[in-house]
Length: 461
Image 1: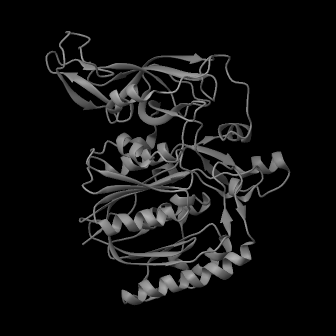
Image 2 (image 1 turned 90 degrees about the horizontal axis):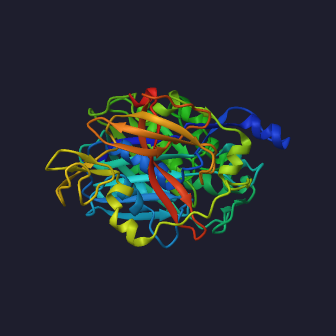
Image 3 (image 1 turned 180 degrees about the vertical axis):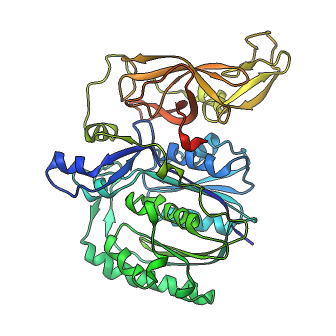
């Protein structure tokens, strides 16, 4: 039995009201709000957040497959950064499925075919101001642990591929170009229907047997047309349907929403329709407990993001930075030597005196013992603010940067920038949670990833 052992999504707390876009540009629809990744988040950091949630205390014996249509590096792997920050062992092979919307379905198919894998898909959706992708997009990530003790057993898969130039973006460009949507309907609806007929026929399942149906595609009309072939009660996406299209992560987001509504024994069909069609059929097992897993962010904390801030965060509205020297990029030797701390947030516990050294070092700060340390992961260690200040000269995109000194339960203090802190005033004693973010991007394109902390939320429990 192979399927999905656990799953999770990560949805940033930022919300951009579509009315704010319409009010600024004088056009567009103004209903609802879309999730927005912060200035220090990208597809890699979103993926890390979802992956850590899905993994819990697990390790993966197979591979990591990371899909995004907005990879932050080309040639260099982004999946290896996700693996390091997610705390995976070096023996876990990590592969990118990048640059295409269909990558989310491809990564899931690869992970399921392997039988033991971590599958992660993450995307930031934006384009030129006033575009449909800007208003109707959603920044999000979804992660699935594939294994042999599933909460959702794989029943069957089917795929079709069709070359069709309907949506494209040049490398490095902001604008996504699209053909008329009616051509997408003509091309994709028959493909989706064939893929569905294929998987249902081979698994001897009727449409009326399906409890939940997920259709993911950037074509709203094509999606509506495909869904009309199924019972209306099986096609609801719940609160996820209000978020918008999440690119490579959209299939995963819809699948998690279906899993959360499902009950043991339910059949769940998920269809991705882009550059062809991919269909996945799952049966929920007795291990599954509906509700309360993965989508806590939809009912948890949110923060309003202004349209000006959104444009600035995406590099579409440059602002005067703090007058400081250019940020120096991380250099390879230092990054290699501090991988465990920089990417995995692993401290060192001295075996001689028990002192926790943050960051780890060869000589203990308390007893001067040399090379006598045990690695100690810090991501899940409770922490509180010891003191704080506003930094108006930071290289941060959003000023002032909130800088906090944090005390960890069991020992150790370190200084962090606070993420998700726009409009937030920290207080001494506040609970905080470590989070993997971007510190800066150098002129040569090197991204300095670090661990920050964010305010503790009710959904963190």
